[in-house]
Image 1 (cartoon, rainbow, N blue to C red):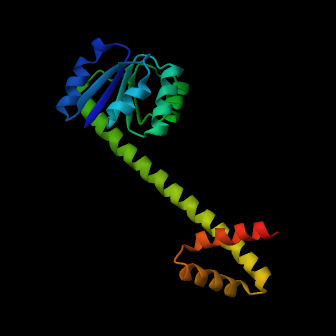
Image 2 (image 1 turned 60 degrees about the horizontal axis):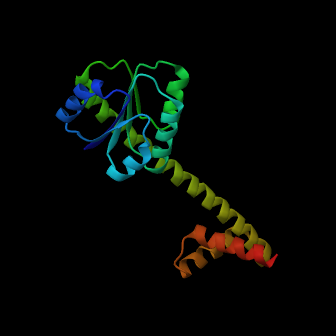
Length: 190
């Protein structure tokens, strides 16, 4: 697994890099916290990012948020910064694991693995949420289309639904897609 290291002090990271490599990670690059991180992430496409910085700047968090918004991946942040608002901002920026005072390099492999597992779970939850929102939106379209059919054809709700289903089957389309087409057609005709 490829790891991109971001740090404000390269001299402190040598034991961490060694520990990560012993845990099966390959460091594909080391960047300073003041560098433009986004281009490097897109170029090397690591499996995870590890940030080692005593304090966390708003600029670093903004860069992390831009990265995780475009290319979601696990981010482990090792710091001395205990401020609650910084922790909150880091989580909002997409940091998967925020670790304070990690002086034991032996924990790095486990921290990276936990971050990856947590990241995968978060991605599953986001996918489920997106699917649920789509199902609810589709239901709204079906209900609205049924209402249009009921008014136009003077049908009962059940007959309007059956008509909508038959139309979807005849055209080999999803019920929600047919419902949207009916709504758009009704908007054009009105």
